[in-house]
Image (cartoon, rainbow, N blue to C red):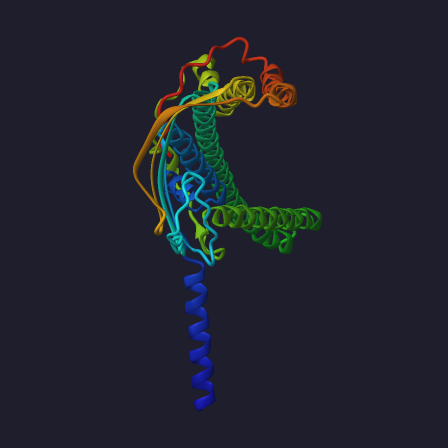
Length: 360
């Protein structure tokens, strides 16, 4: 008796679990898109790339500020030999014992003319940042479109299953009716067999539709990083209440706002700035330098408040011959993006507007 009660309880528990597993969850299309943006690995990777480019741009901008370095030394000297060349007179006094040296320095350098390298570097990294932001927006649009396609496919599959279930009921009812008519000899058996064959065909179509429904449901839940056993229920109101803003009324604004083409255009501008950066090797570097030094050689000399200021010039003469290859490499990368633009016929027809501030 106890075993029978335990079996009944187990069957009841399994039934409750299966009912819970079959419960359907409804998620609006707008919520699904934002959930995909939050969970998608592609979107998160794109955000990370944009953040990296932003930090790189800020790092390049910091090169405009002066360099300030502080250094100090303390050295212990052992048996140092002293020969004072300035004291020519004979002197019987013993030479001082020199056993330590202390030096402190403060140096500052402000670039005045770095060969147009700083401003071109800022332009290049700013364009690369804008291009990465445009690519991130394109990634978000692709993920959103993927969610919409899955939603449409899932809704279509659900409606197909519902329709086939209704057809199955009608076909089964027809079989029951034909069975009674065949028993009474009103219709031939061949008609009954045809109706039974129709039921089998509907059942086969229903099985295929359920399989397609499960596949699309699994793909959508995987995209949204949900439990794979979750059954999503799509409602017509999810499409009817979906808010779509800034829908273009013709082809021109749609083409102008294409983020992938905008990214190519910005990458081309960054490559053009990189060519100018490479050409900066032909120019000298001029900077203002200043410093402060203090020195103490024990028992010999003490230097305090030794300040200096001047102009520093650096020119790599060998770079005139070696820098040509760097320029050719930069120009080759520039032509790559120009070729990408030429591959798209719409880039020559439509003029891109200045990109607005992109928030990711």
